[in-house]
Image 1 (cartoon, rainbow, N blue to C red):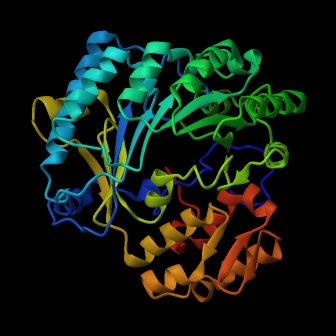
Image 2: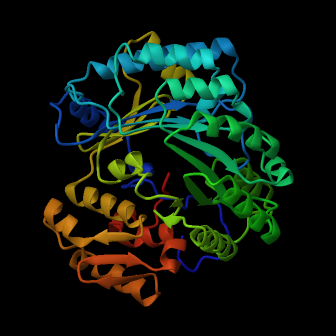
Image 3: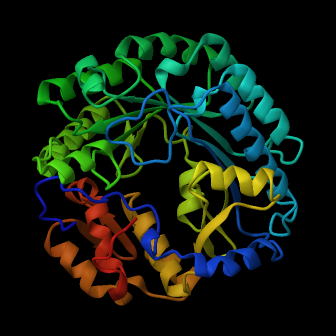
Length: 436
């Protein structure tokens, strides 16, 4: 996507890794096998990602590996496979006794699991791994799946950061986009969450959902401010290839129903202004925090600086000892590999070059709104201002960023366009290739 793009076309916009996922291959699996069996890099932070792929409904904009048709037996079967994976991961040489710096329960909808299932899963996991000293344990929730006992269970299990997928406060917009919850469930869950006193409670919103309007968006920001969460994350809606909306657009040749990019950016800009006016601070191109001294993002900040991430669960993505990898993407392949073959369910991998790792850190850290040029000199021995001179000059000319000695800072316009700025730093062979 170029910075000048107006219409929201089908294709990935949000960039979360480099080189693009489409370049990862099964041929590179020996690379990740070798990395997993290598001695630990003790100075490298270690994180754990657990994918819980169940949802009550599939949102029309969802592009993740999720299942909406699984019963209690299926859930238990998956949990058994995930527990086996954790057991195998715990025995890997690359672990080397390192403590987990951060843990992330993502989805799907991790809160789809009952309190009993969650306790059972965590009990099994703790036989093999321990996250009692983790800086951050994040758990994603869909409001309608929460109950007061379940919220208490999450607190007891050590969750420090609860992320609530509100997305919008309009029932009509939520229904149109296929969300499973309605606004009343947000408020019901909110009282339980507040009473439990998590260290950080985040609310997710999406600008540009189908059916959204300026009046609706203003109301969403007003209601978010009234709830006063510790942090607010706002994504601009996109249309990756495998969403319900994308398939409808491509198959039926209809016009995109998603708001165009200038409108979505105007809504995000409004949110920045309103939230900053009541004391929030911009923490990245997507996130605002109420108290920067209290709220940090260990998962985000460590991952963007090249930490190891042991990824577990079907289709999940990880990074270990300098190698990217992804697990098998189909239910049967994932569960059989673990429960019948007693092996890790590895699917594809890629070992980036040192230059590609530099690019990965640069583009991800730029999402925070600034770059410390000295960081890259010290870590990679590269002056990134010289290395990427053409890209910087392009973005300066377009008013997206400024320089102040050894600091690069995104302007407000740059923050609104953050992901659109990043492909300019890609190597030539990755310019224009499909991202996923």
